[in-house]
Length: 215
Image 1: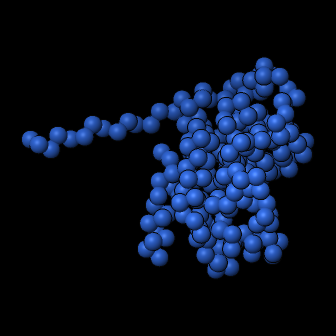
Image 2 (image 1 turned 135 degrees about the vertical axis):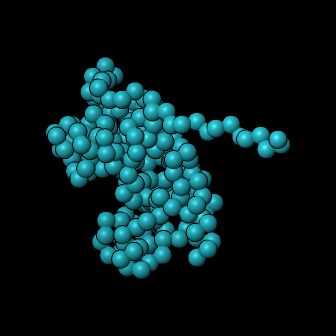
Image 3 (image 1 turned 180 degrees about the vertical axis):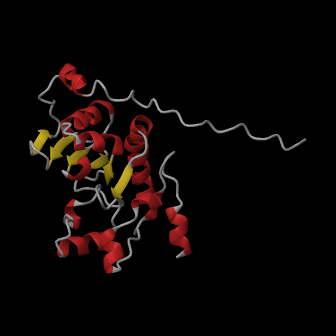
């Protein structure tokens, strides 16, 4: 238990620790531990996800919520076997199973997130594609997958990103195919999110200078 507690305290980025991504309702309800098989690989993939994708979101829109993140292979297999919205282990490497690569040897990590700033706008009728295109134009993501509740999305970082965007929100399906250019021009996309906050404009208090303890 103490080793797991120490692992959870591992800092992945300025704003996130590994423990933020380890909670699972499946794990809690069914009593299946969500413990990594390869902690070093999990940390490496998690650092890339948090630093490249999640930190910029925090510094643009304020705090974000992690709905779900890492799953161990054992937990993910249980979720798939019992139809709990988990893909097969064979296709979940470099996604939910952070310590496993995908079939092409790419490393990656996925988390389901909610951006409260945008969720409030979405609740008033704003188009989910406004956020999808903002992410596409600002972040080096692998995949975005949007859901109707709270405009939550699966956001994935991966080596050799495909940069595809999909959604269960109307219009459902593929917005941007792997390796393809969006159907809307850059100017059209920028018009969609022209009222968004400036990129990474939120400045948190700097660390104070170390006290001179020699006096």
